[in-house]
Image (tube, rainbow over all chains, first blue to last red; front, top):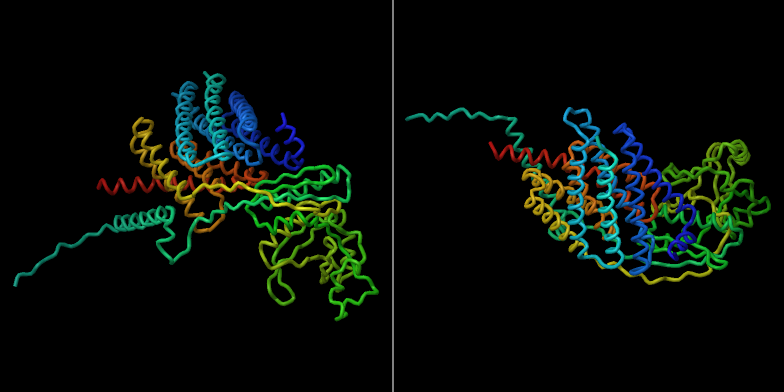
Length: 170
Length: 403
């Protein structure tokens, strides 16, 4: 718990407002863009839950690293940007695909799910190789940051495909 | 003698120009790859280019003793100090209360002198007027115009102004210099204009932490504060003026240098690893048949081109970058190029999404997030243009080879 108390006492209100504002703004804009491109409320749930789950996984990993490996500094904020970036661009492919093909005769939600799953797996493969190749040269905090980015974004992307399957179907 | 007749040569000008253009583009691409590779700056001394890695971190702790012990003043001081350091792109900042003192810890690659300036000076300012009984033209006392005690306080201070807008203006010698134009809040506008009218054609002063800068009021609409010529110090003054007002005075009672574990990542090793990893990724996709051959070729080329363009940008602009930020950005480039390349229908939306993320993180971000946000704004168009341009180039090359 020490880590959370430290963050609470050491952070200025200005930091809280900026970081909170950034995340809330991105969350709202993603939901807005999702609705505008799909005109379907069902798409809001998976992305909302994905963001929430990714933040939970991130907090858990930071806590575990603080507990067993290293002390946490503001360096550990980097994964917030990286995870948001990876989840958002992966999600953009889904809503853009839906926006483009939803009026096609052969379009089904099953096809959308399959296509999204395929794309997500490809992205996970690319992310795995890219992170693995550079991780060989990294140590300590930088390595832990890459581990956090990798585990959180890969699991979030994977969970997101399951959520899409669960919430968006014909 | 027999005459030799040559067949009339027919030139297809469109094909000719097509070939010429293709050769020119190929040369440029080759040049981009060459510049991007590590150590190629040693091949020529005609142009200076190299990655300007700034990995020399330093860290310090400062103890600040505030005149006021009011919780609200302490909170405001912490906020303003953090805002100043964040606006100066200081990577790691922590400001908190320890016993009766405020403790600020910084870890950064930025100039130590400027960071010291940002922390050590409260930069509380007010407008002052000259006392009648002081001779400011006395040649034996040239410092008179800079001393706080020679001036009377006015009702105008930092609360009067919305912000200080810094711009270049013609000075009295006819050369362009930096000036800070004071923008007043609507509520104080009329009283401040009356003040300027009253002192038009005279000298007043701006008292900053006890040091007065004399200011000549040339007209009753403008209050222009003269600034330094040096661009980096002007940036610093801009931050000090426009990042909020410290509510109460303070002084730095002590400061200690802290030990920093320096990163030992070698950018040459990392660059080679990145280029190799891209090739390995595409070999994997080739053998696992994730994409067809043409797609793999296009995607491999555009990813390498994106990464090279980014490295060329860094090398030519000599923009300082920390090696680990370079690594993170390179991973972003690999992923982004691949996603843009393989999702034709989403290209523009992905570009917009990354730009929006970049803008938000750059404006609202703190520390490293702010720095990485700026790089998102650079890599988004680079990846997009590399994919569009790279695909067109590959298609043209394939077309010409088939002829």
